[in-house]
Length: 431
Image 1 (cartoon, one colour):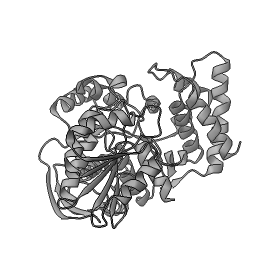
Image 2: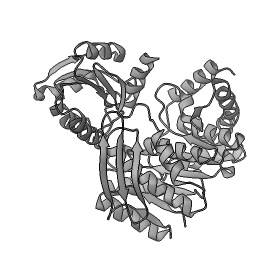
Image 3: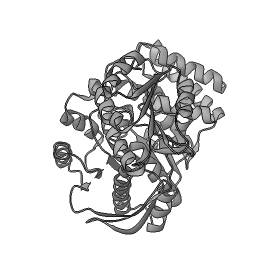
Image 4: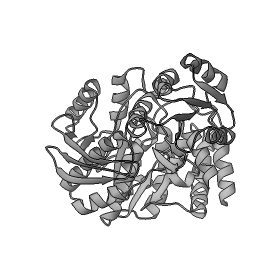
């Protein structure tokens, strides 16, 4: 099987009618047939609504700087499936990816032939992750959940080194629950008995739910709810430098390349994760932590891809992400006119997203993400009309992007957000 054949096969899986039954039985059966490669791996398990990818990127750099052969499994990808499988920042090759698809296909087909429920595409891709990383004899796997936690395919691991839970908000309510407490309980499903938990600062309802679960499972909780002192020393479009002091650690000068106020808090949560990992025997120095953070970039998240005009790609695709993005726009671009290119999915809280971002912009270009979950452009247009902005539209992302560029003055800003599918399509035009 070559790379194009592998992609064709994966697309065939994704075109099947996906099961809506949550649970781990399918991935467990598939991995059992493959010899349970996940049992060979030491994993750090990461869940949350926002910030997972940024935290993974920082931790990957820190652990690689510390001398560990560090694997990262993340989703979704922006341009190629290969992005989901990284070792020390290097994506799986096309050849190796095709080999892995061919390998897992054999057991996937066996399951179907034997009458088992068909694994989902994400379960198939997760099986690749465990087999590939086990074959490559990595030291540590950073394992990002795809959806939720308790019933997520990644939750087959039995004893993670650490559970890291990032910001939790309202998203994927049709699967995870319609209240913040239900979503928090689902995300906290990655917590195992006697396993340390590092926690991003949360709303009280969320914090209390997770603290209760940690108590029930006798899992030590390291949180940042109180007594965190942060001072921003420098903040511009190149970097942020800040100092931070907590009951666990103190850093005089952290040089963060990721942009956005929210990345400061993501970074501090990564610092507490490093503190816990050191307590559990990993050799991580302050120098490797600071160096790893400084070297981190995470494509498609408050990413500046050009100047004159400034073009920013941000994968904010839910209400919490849009709120955090809005705060950053106020800080960085207070006196500039903003053109917004936006396309969203219909299963998101798109009305709230529009309500938060549109008051800050001058011109709006609407488009549609390349997904069967896309929100129809006419429906999106209707909810923008009450803001009395100049609105243009084009269902084709590349054409919409060119239109957005053409109507943005060189001294101003083009902001692209609303869907990672859309961001990936724009990034593909830059190659």
